Image (cartoon, rainbow, N blue to C red; front, side, top):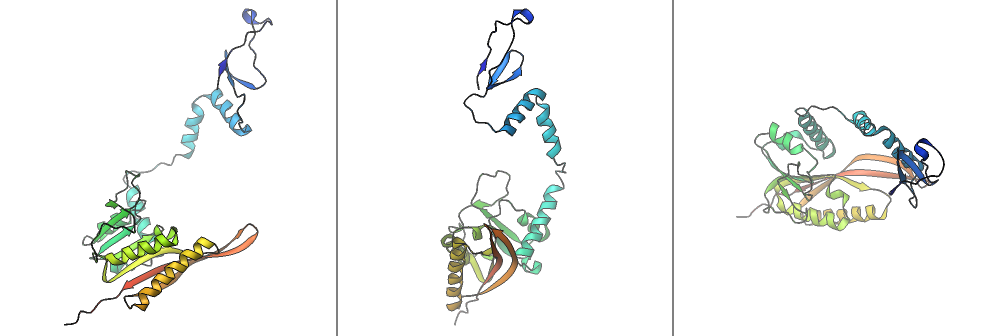
Length: 260
């Protein structure tokens, strides 16, 4: 954006008259901002002109309009309770099974589920894991990929994955499930949700691979699995009516009896 001032031979105040090129817009007296060779939508151009006219007050107005007052002391408690309720609903958790357990929460950077559990179940430990390290405010115990967990084998009672690994490619989901399964104690459980069933190739491939892995566990008598339908919806995509379903998968690791 280039500032120019063009003298004129026409008479005016002081013998000169300010004028602008047809492709420029006057912003302030004596200064012209050129939009030449720049493709700017009309609504953006109008906003810029209004911004120059009103100054920073327009930004203040926008900020005040969308700013939501909040209590810094109440927000964390409110969010942790909401996250706890969401986990219990979509992961089909029985609150009684949380007491006295070591719980692995996979993909917990945006969740305060662990904080709520540790506040209301003092004898429960929640290991909060996420692969992201860009959120400095998240209270995560360690950052790692779900298929490369820095945990000992058979060290957790319950593993949870809510809206995290189930959104990934099928091969990764299976690798993550294998790794998580190895960290769960005998008699422990894995709860993962949502697992999508939608008429898309990547979704069907992911579902197929997960089902194959689960069947292998059941055929080896090392685990039992329960698929529970949690949501079904229909929508129109490119003129075609499609149906999408979501499942919660619970894998229970069998207790291995040691012979004397």
